[in-house]
Length: 199
Image (tube, rainbow, N blue to C red; front, side, top):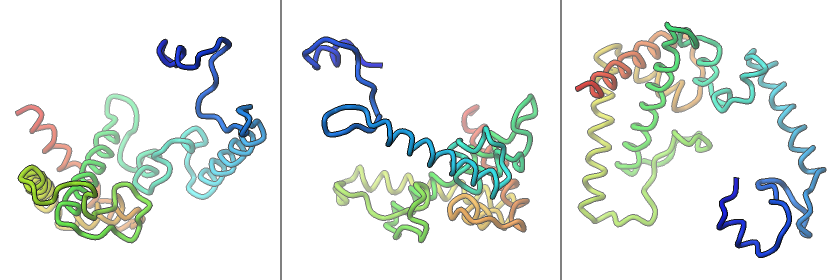
């Protein structure tokens, strides 16, 4: 919804324009493009349902776009809803690992991984940042320490959990043999995060 100041900027009366819709150069809404977008979404949704076997109402979720997210939606990480619903905690733990790993790779100036389409896979240097400043050095040291902490927790729980997390969560590749190690690693991360919040 637009704020009062945004309405005043228009400088003329009339109803508010719909935001985020395709338009012709004249400013009219492009209804043909809207219908085309709807068709694309419905085809993608049907493909996710057919190929991955997820429920139709879950197919539009952002989580349905990755192996780890589909595991969550299909209940492979544990019960999704209800009082025993630990799947959300396991999913968040896996995403926390991916965020810390990405920050670590960026801190050591590692090149992005081959699956550069994933927002959690890359490394590389921060562009537009003074790489000689003390603040940047402290940020990099903090990123390395946070990743080392979570890596140690995973290795203490299961020696294969790092490989499982990197393969399934970061590289978006399914490996049925690593699912058990993935759960063990995510549970260890979750326990560590919860103990840090309490402490």
